[in-house]
Length: 424
Image (cartoon, rainbow, N blue to C red):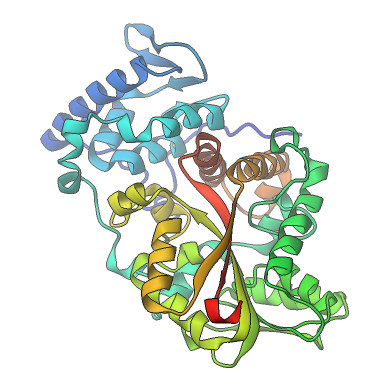
């Protein structure tokens, strides 16, 4: 059975979803809601979408045709967007104030126009309106494990419901067109992604490999099968436990150590440093330290291979101090780097240089589509794990919101290879 996220039948539980049951009110909220309504109506009226507003006098439809959105409680949507901008837009979905039968398709249209949804003359006032991430979310050494646990320690059983058997929680790289990818293609696409990264890092028999961000152990398993010795580090206790179990089950425990360790504490010398979609959790204040650490532990002749979700440099600069829906509900403390800032930091602060890049954002859009299909196809299992209907809507929104970013080209994913020029 495939699940369609239902609208919550009662206000979200305050203890599980603090603040979500409160709709902004008062004079200030009324003013900001009126502004939000005007901006929203103006924006969607010129987009290829169809928006149905359920008003007291009846349903009113705006837009130019395309993916549909139905706003069941317009006043709540305006109030939330007016006070909390895009966070409020996402929260209004969580409470059921609006729905979209093709959520990813609708959000893709918005993502493609993200820079122009708000008129340029009003964007100058952006800094006066948007909130900054709370200090406790900064990815400092004291905060990082809590940030990681917020997402990755939710439940290994939850992730097993929608990931493929490799338990890879990052973009697959499909052999054929990603648009045609099916659920049965996901495992091979994940293997292809990992093997390509290991090839670029020149991992083979006898290689000393450091993996920053263990996931659930698949990359370490594949590196060990090549005869490498692997030290893989994580801040997620849940990931460590399952990764260790999977590695032992593969008969590779003698070649792989899975440690709870902050990347800043890594010592030793390694022929290859690999990391898959971990840099997004580092935070822009610590990118320099991240790459300096890698530079310090990389042996002469060594290679660094990183898979990273990236965004255009100008958008990264514009949003790096913005508190977002993703920060609040999914990944505290994260920020997507640009390829340009990675090149700049490594050039100025390390001996590493970017020597190869492959972008494959549409493959991530397909990966997320398959994950969401699998998640929505497991309603009984999700409920049995104790996750409520608000969580289901949150997770569905997160996966489709992310898919829209890749499908529209607003964000991308890259495999990046770095090396020292004198070693090449």
